[in-house]
Length: 113
Length: 113
Image (cartoon, rainbow over all chains, first blue to last red; front, side, top):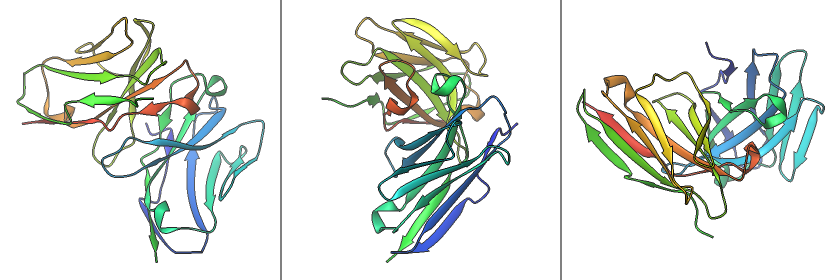
């Protein structure tokens, strides 16, 4: 029962262009969403989050959009840089982030120089 | 400020054996969570410890058990190992239930033969 889904296992984007990573969820109790980034041989690191009371959150080159009615969120990276090449995990939580994280399966992003 | 460290980095066991994985939390953190990441999957929550008490558990059988020590370091024990237990085991520490401040270690790669 995959409650958080990332349907694209991989994505390749030209350097300088926009990268868009998508995530869908099925559990209506989720009200807090996070993106983590993982490099090989390292643990995931927190990137950006959004609460269900918002539909957009920005942090520098990273923007997360939330569409509650569609149970869909996306991460936009612009402009994409070679250092952004990594695996990106979408994660969801209940109780406004105070419950355990449920992760998606990840999307491997490759930025082409 | 030292980060989250896990040992060992790699481990090979045979079916039926028992294993202990160790985690030193980041300085000042009193909460430790353990996640299992199988190949091609996202991390799955095993359990969380807060001030030496279990504080939430995922859908894992009782042969997965843990401990947290007074210095907030932690152990994950798995008894009667099965082939499907082969995975990357991630430890994450935090100062409470704030998922944005979850700091992950690099993980222990367990192979069960």
